[in-house]
Every structure is written in C-alpha cells, then in structure tokens.
Amino acid sequence: MNLQEIRERLSELDRQVLALVAERQRLSREVAEAKRAEGKATRDYTREREVLMQARATADSLGVSPVLAEQVMRLLIRGSLTTQERIRVAAGGRGDGKTALIIGGTGKMGRWFSDFMASQGYTVTVADPARRPDNAAYAYIADWRESSLDYDLIVVATPLKIANVVLQELAGRKPRGIVFDIGSLKTPLRQGIDALQSAGVKVTSVHPMFGPDTELLSGRHVIFIDMGNREAVQAAQELFGSTMAKQVVMGLDEHDRLIAYVLGLSHALNIAFFTALAESGEAAPRLAQLSSTTYDAQVDVATRVAAESPDLYFEIQHLNDYGRESLQALRGAVEKLWQSVSTGDAPQFTAMMQQGREYLAGRVRND
Ligand SMILES: C=C(O[C@@H]1C=C(C(=O)O)C=C[C@H]1O)C(=O)O
Image 1: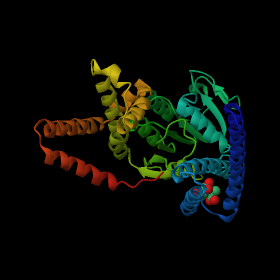
Image 2: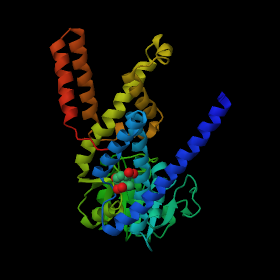
Image 3: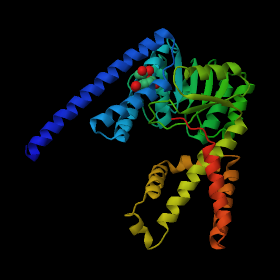
Image 4: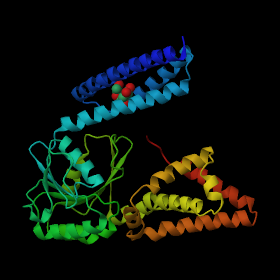
C-alpha cells in the first residue's frame, strides 16, 4: 500500500471507531433508563473500575498501550455520564409548568442557567439590557424592572456589583418565587440578600463552582448559602438533585473566607506567574519557546486565567471582605521561599516541600 492507500484505510477505520462510539453512547442512554427504573445512582465507580481494568487487559493482549486504552475509556465514560446526567435532569421534570426569570441571562453563566432550567422543563424568560438570548425559545425583556416578577424562580446572574443593587431592588418588589444570585463572592451581596430576607422573600444564594462551558457536573461542587430560609435552600438544592454535582451548604462569611483561597489564591498565583514571565526582560521571548513538564502544565493553567474577564477577576480579588488574607498568605509563602533560597537554608526548603506533600496527600480527590 502507498501512503495515499494507507491513509484511506485509516480514515475508514476512524469511521468505524466512531460508529462504535456512537453505539456505546446509545447504550448508555438505555443504561440511564434502566438505572432510573431500578432507582440506582447514575455513577457507579465499581463498574467504572471494572471497565478500565478490562480495557487495560484487552489492550495489553492486543499489543496496544494500556495507558492509551485507559485514556480513551476515561473519555468515553465521561461522554456516557454526560448523556446520562442530561437524561436524568430532563426526566426529573422539576420545572414542568413552572416559570423562571434569569436576570443577566445573556451573560456566560446566565446562558448556562437558562439552558439548565429549560432542560428541567421550566419556561424561561431572560432579562438582560445587553442583548437578546441566542435561543429563540426563551422570552426576552431588556429590563427586569418592567416585569411583573410573577415567577416561581428568579436567578440573578449579573456581574457582582450590579447584583447587590438588583437584589436590593427586588426586595422592594417582594416577588413570590424563590430568589437566588449566582455570584462568585457573597460578602459584596450581603446587603441585597439581607434586604430580601427581611422583606420575607424566599431567598438563598448559590455558587456554582464551574465555568459556563461545563457539561458534566460529576466531580463539580455547588455551594448553597443558608441565609435562614430553609425552604429556599432546599428548593435551590432540588434543582441540582438529579445532577451528580456535590452539594455543600455553608454560611455567607465562611463561603468568602474559603473562596479567598480556592479562587483568590489560585488566580493570584497565576497572575503573579505570567506577570513574572512577561516582565522577565530579555528572557521573555525565548521563554515563550521553551517547555518542560511542570512549566507546560503551569503555562496551561495561566493561559486560561489570562483569558478570563479582567473585570470579574478584579472583583474576585478586590470585593472579597476576606481577600487580603489569602494574598498575604501568598506574600508570606514567597518570602519564606526567598529566605530559604537566598540564605541557603536547605532544611527550611525541605520542610516546605514536606509540608506541601503532606497537605496535598490529605486532600481527597474526586474526578
Ligand atoms: C454506563 C454506565 O454508567 C456509568 C458509565 C460507565 C461507562 O461508560 O462505562 C460506567 C459506570 C457508570 O459510572 C454503567 O453503569 O454501566
């Protein structure tokens, strides 16, 4: 066979591989139905292990790398879980006959929520002065203030600064439905949420710990802030009840103290990393061409951070009542590193490495 013929044969094989992937996806839909009928959870870790071990063994016997086989199978399992989760959410039908208003509904997370609510059967109305929703199935108003606010659910998905004002204004209108924001920080929204609570509105606050491109919620967290209205917290939790997301309930201050590290520290570290690289003088253009395992992994994360909205990322640093705490911790850690390196203090350096290893080993992973 010449090169052209071999490539044609490869293309044919790729088509067959994908046809089998499609067949596997189709079967995973049937699995979703069978599990629902038997009242079983979507995810089955024991079965996943079995699938992976089987794939490794089969690959080995075929002379294929078990590592490659496992990587392929992990992707396929992810695909099948995504399909199953969607089926579950839709079948839950929690929103059948109910209505939702998404304020800021054409922003990135606003769109995610509009689609998520619609997939549960809610009739969605989007309010956003910026533009109409891409999905013509959603009703649209430019200004939510002109709405009757007669909805079962109101989600505030505007930028943080605006959200506090919107929540306060909503409190004045006392809507009958559940109200929650989806801000990354909660201390800047305290007045707005308190105002709703005082007005007797069923209010809570939700933080989906994932970006707008997320399809599969398994391994992701959703935080619910309990402001004293159990009914609102439960209703919000139920919205995620048929997903595989891990639910965590906490208080408003606790949320922002933790987020100062989970978001604040990790963003800050990456901003410091790419700033140091970009300002490395003559080395900067040459560094851009180099690679190493750790450097590439870090550059990868930093690239994603650099692509995010500067306004949002500044708000996450600046508007958190507890934000300075984690930035100070970062300064302290860099200073400690500087001390040990510049004075040649190997034991101090080793102690830092050891402490990190122990800390990270204690962190339970789930993906
Ligand atoms: C398809 C199933 O559902 C999930 C997906 C799996 C897969 O794609 O192989 C395996 C286990 C489950 O977490 C199943 O339970 O068999």
